[in-house]
Image 1 (cartoon, rainbow, N blue to C red):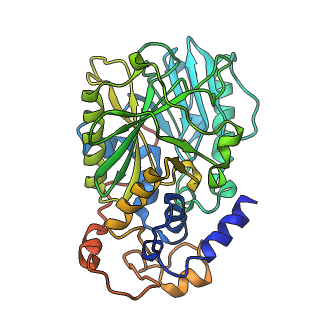
Image 2 (cartoon, rainbow, N blue to C red; image 1 turned 45 degrees about the vertical axis):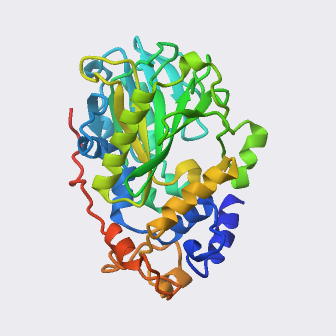
Length: 378
């Protein structure tokens, strides 16, 4: 149902979304990206294995990694500490949080039974690894092209404690960043319930990246046209001021996100930072978690609508979603991988010259900072 609706929406793209007046919503532009952007940069950024290389451009770190492998046979619980995070690198979800050798949080990526309470034995980790590596995210959401380019893998890393020590793992600070400039930061906390499952009752408080102040009126609604809000998939701000993030931390997060996006020369990315209790190795309490190029699976809606319009205007001001296909390729098969030599083309269906055309092309010049993946490192 969702895929059919998406294909129908994409068929309406007879011109670039940024040529519309008024501008379309952010989710429309994301679907345009899904249909026409085939840069290897997107796959590189989506791959969790590459997070340290992107983090280095902003002089921040990632959680310490105990294991990164594409081979399930290389996994042994004997080589891991009693507390760690275990997750897939090539797909969404697929996360275990282990404390004192037992699973306390399980975020599945399949219709798998919860392993909360189970011993994190070698047998369990290998079983989950094999199951996760057999799971291809693009088979569930084929429009998210970048996932189809990734090699399956898993990693184990340190657990970062939340800043208020009131949860199982670090909070999230998610930056919505366009051409190296962050507009809003989303602070998400209490993401998991007492039963170890993903909770929809957590809070998501938005901060204006210019004023650094919380915007309690801003919310997201996930799902097709925001209908997820009807089933508890929308967000609620935290109205307890004692839990708000300080302006200094928001400013540091904005600077880090801006540097990461600028170094990657990416038009739009959501930079997902982890906000944790400061430690010797993470003195500011900010680390890079992952980079997200298809937020909410391509179906984000924000209220008030002026925020959604602000996002779309920022993306279009720099030229909008990058077009890798020729017009003929787009018409014949919007979801096909690019033929050799098409990677650097930016053909548009609309042939109108824009005043910002030359500047936009310069901004789209992609420098993929990620070197070839290095697997099986401990």
